[in-house]
Length: 254
Image (tube, rainbow, N blue to C red; front, side):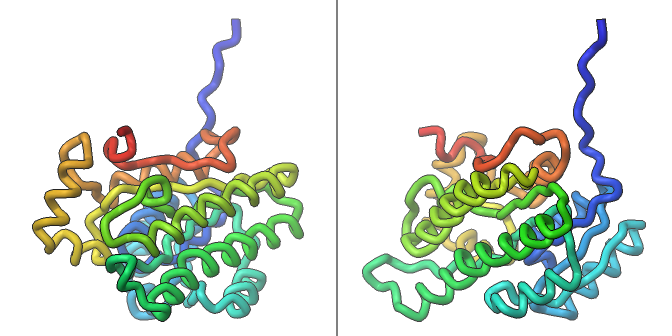
């Protein structure tokens, strides 16, 4: 009898583009992919923060490059990805949250969040896919979505709308590109301690709401996303596409 073999989590020989990689979840994902063997390109708007992150990763023996990129600039993103690619792996962690009651939402706030979270994510994912298709290569494209893509939340109508949209185009793209061997999935975290979420954690009422909803009794840390992103990027998840991984401590279980 031949025993089954566990698929590899090793990413040696793979090139990964991580957008929003200068801090928080994006940086954590970049480190995880690099530790699994991938050559990682860190992308973000802030060149100084990118260089600092890259220097630390390089000092730790990781293969890393940088690419200054604003994913809300569709034309610039497509040109940069076409020149630097093709990439076997995409992790898009670039995102924006501006929270307010729905009745107080301004058009400017709606546009700012939607332009990055939906439009930027959509065209970045497409740009990486175009490079893979042109090179006749398979790949794994991952957008960092949110548990709020599956539920509603206090003062989060705009944010929820954008993340629900990400789940929708993920499914459609997975259907379109499956025959190319390109997988498209999302990771949906609960509240993770990052600079982006610090204002929420400074609000006692919001902290009470969060801790009541997370069944495991703690908020998320960046490390909680690092294992899942390696899984989705690797052959270990070879039959997963058009779906999501909820890393939410049980928030959406009820």
